[in-house]
Image 1 (cartoon, helix red, strand yellow):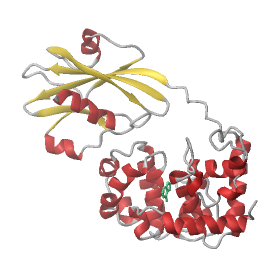
Image 2 (cartoon, rainbow, N blue to C red):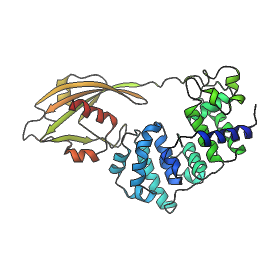
Image 3 (tube, helix red, strand yellow):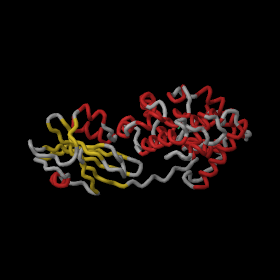
Image 4 (cartoon, rainbow, N blue to C red):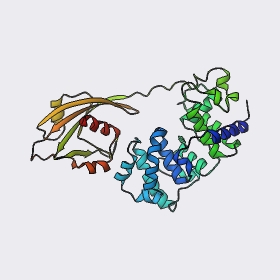
Length: 346
Ligand code: ADE
């Protein structure tokens, strides 16, 4: 097998030739790198491409994000999901202002002090923006390394994760440019060494790949056990009066914390309209079913049932806020609520 030095250099050279043009790659800074890496966790590149530039224009530095209203930050994050990351990013910005004079740090130990920043994100910012010689391992990198070494262990096992970090460490020690090597490993996983059938014909390190040598590149790593998803039912009641929509804010814990929604009754089982009407906490004159869809999150399968509720003139809603359409545009909502409003519009 080629030495780590040769492998690293092949990956670096391949990256320079084949990298995608992505907004966070056009100009590097620690702040841009921190924002993009947090956005990219568990979110597809195409989604992040849409959101990154407007977000950076509004929050060009940690100070602007630290000073912003959390509701606005969540609204700018809309569509990226996992809103806890947006809250952590804002708290990180506040920490950077308080402890680092507003300048995003580039050392791993400093980065690890930031809320929501773990070994991967700290390594990515330090190596990509700061060219520090530190490894990174995300899902893509772990797959590339498992195949190179024909490591067929369950990728979620502690040992497999530890070995991936060690192998990534050996490559970054031997490379010329840690930024090119680390982003190259990720890019290789995203474009060539893909989950299903990898495109070994275009891989710069195929000649040293143990999985390919034994014809097992399609079976390494073995499939992860699918996460068990709980099934729940959300009964969303769309209520309009004089062109305004009744919205309520979710609590600080659990899914979609702090985001806004139409009044929603959550239950383990599907409810009939009269039950929804009784449980929604609003004195409704009537309720009609509009349709249903399933919204899948990492640990939950949510069956969303959409209703239209009518409220008699003069009756106080008692809960929530009546929102105009221009207020709605600024309100942070989940993708599920976007879908609910689409059902109610059609
Ligand atoms: N996924 C995570 N980080 C990335 C990056 N810097 N470029 C492309 N995809 C990524």
